[in-house]
Image (cartoon, rainbow, N blue to C red):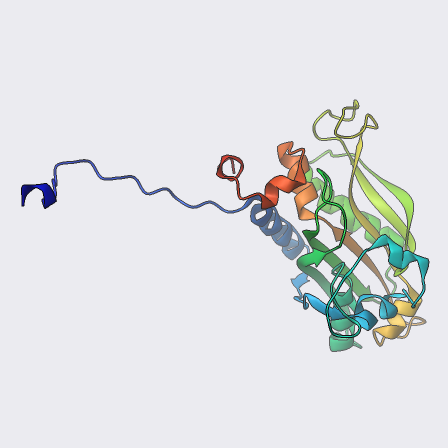
Length: 254
């Protein structure tokens, strides 16, 4: 029976240690930053109704902005996989009204669209919502500038560009100077020197009212960011499909 004997003098086989997925690493960093700034995590559901995903966020039936987000509808009438984390805004407001709110809403989103190096059918998003008294756009700018400095390093340049979202008014997008080229211009930033990291704006009075708040008394701001895009900027990743390919050659780098 010598062939079945165990040679205890042989060196042991190394056990490979697991690693956190790069998306998880970035999400944890985002959670920590917002926690340090006084935000709490509010979890909302992945399967939503058309009412919460669109109508209560100022997307009435037939609104052209619905075309911005191709949706996965289920067999149930008016039931779909959420296309963004914004439905959680209504649920958080209705739960905490009339108290002030300062929360982030992380989660997976789903959109029926072509998969490319820059777009996926499923992706993480982190929504932010603040509702209170005398909340102004300057509060939004100061908060997001602080986030950019903490996330990407002190001295990071930022800019706000006017944009459009049905649930915020006014709306904007926040850019940071390109991390990879230092703002000089490269293929990743399309030679503009800037990279978009999130959308934001003041909560539309209609949305505040749908959440149970009196827009003549309360005001607020909201923002939404994509952790995978932030991870791509941090690590110079050029293809978002790598996050879901389960390729150990990619994952073991993190």
